[in-house]
Image 1 (tube, rainbow, N blue to C red):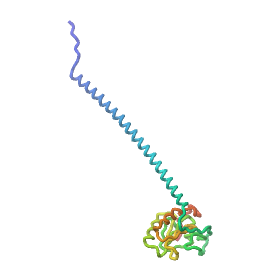
Image 2 (tube, helix red, strand yellow):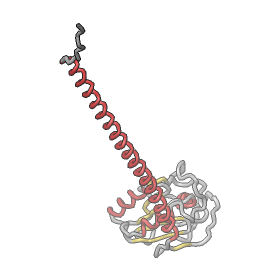
Image 3 (cartoon, helix red, strand yellow):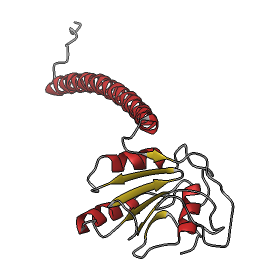
Image 4 (tube, rainbow, N blue to C red):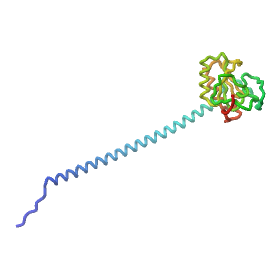
Length: 220
């Protein structure tokens, strides 16, 4: 008499099936996380790219705007500025009798004054200062009417401005005089807004006779 086959229903078989199901669920969950992380990473990368493009665009626009502002300032008229036309540029050894005080051009010494933000506490030689202006420097001078606050403000301005220099000039008529080649402006106070305008327009400005020439290795 034959025996009927019996189906296995052991507890171990059920545990194996449960483990397989659990593993499948974990893998599915992991795949969902991977997909979600990829989406997040893609979005973040896109945001970074957009941000970089926006930043780059802003930098370019800002630089362009600053360039336009500087060009506008260079072309703007400054009330009170006097100009003296074409002036001679010969190198001489003797003292020069300049027609304006302080001088803003003309024959001058072959050695210029250091003018990379130099502040001199004593009067300097006219002939050397004129040579510095030929190189595009702005020369700030002042007399005894200038206040300590004026002198401090102007000194700070000059020290932070390459192609500029400053010195006392007791004989000048105005309290503060801003000088560039063939160009001059007298003001009563360092707080006058025309001071900054003058620096912006005339430091290495269009009046410069020798653009880019050295303002170091000069002499007092």
